[in-house]
Image 1 (cartoon, one colour):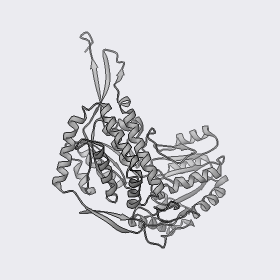
Image 2 (cartoon, rainbow, N blue to C red):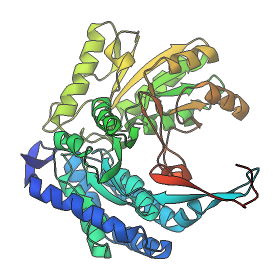
Image 3 (cartoon, helix red, strand yellow):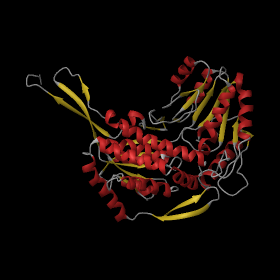
Length: 460
């Protein structure tokens, strides 16, 4: 099987790579297992030095790395550069804070003395997505390598050059063989790899189907797993919100990464009192977007990641309209080469429609008007997903009250769902389980070992 780079701006195949054979895969796993034996004993200071070098190299090569991202999955070049900066900051964050996060935690038992010691598990394996090809890897590899684990990465098949470039950064930084390994393999072989006894934990960011498959394999083999899957984030607008500023954030929340973000704002739920004003101004913003080549710094909306994604979202829109939804804007593929979709807004959505229940991964917004705050909360929670969400209001206490009622892993007040190194990231329901980033992220794949010291006089 071959793995290809296709430019979604033109749908032209740029380069093809051969998948690893079984012998190469076995060598990769063996090297990771062997590397763990020494890396687990490497002082935190040396682990941190290596990771700071990786982050520094990432920044030094930002222009080149960003161009690879844009070429392979169509991200706007300025956003690709921002992704490199974010990824480097995450790696530096764990290099700076990992030892503190994993320091012994002393307990106060009724008898004797005790503490929790955090120990690495071993080889951990991650399946990563194409939409943030450096950031997603950084938030897995950063904490786990600092914790003393070694990592295997199966990256998305449409970003092989990104995957290779990340591995090259570790090699150039002087990482020992087996510490960080890129696996050019198919998804089917990735699921089969979970059963290998040398792999102690697995993580996946991607689709529900892929997550269910990987989690099933992990469960059968009694291994820890972390899943970050899809989202259908609600963007709630209350009547006391600053509408102009809220519309600006709505555009960012929906169109960032060409709309292909798990925590993108996808369902715009607006109370009746301000619904018309919001929809009018939001439609004007969406309609005025400049669509084009993602390498052009004046472009505001680029292509979807590939032709398959563009066909899928156009079909979701068509099925919704056929079922009675109304098009306020767009709704069709753009008549130009590449994986492009028009900026689109749907209204009059009802249960049973594709756009009501399914995740729309692209520049398509679902608009809902509701009578009041409680109706907004109820609609926000009427989703199989529970990743993120946001609420816009001038009353922060009211915002916190609404946030408390939204059944998701993250809620932002007066800002679309976002990410940074020191904030935990993860969801509920069909959006997955476990957390990445912040102190919580480094605790997922470590053994929280109890060590108790007893006096001979302590009771049994």
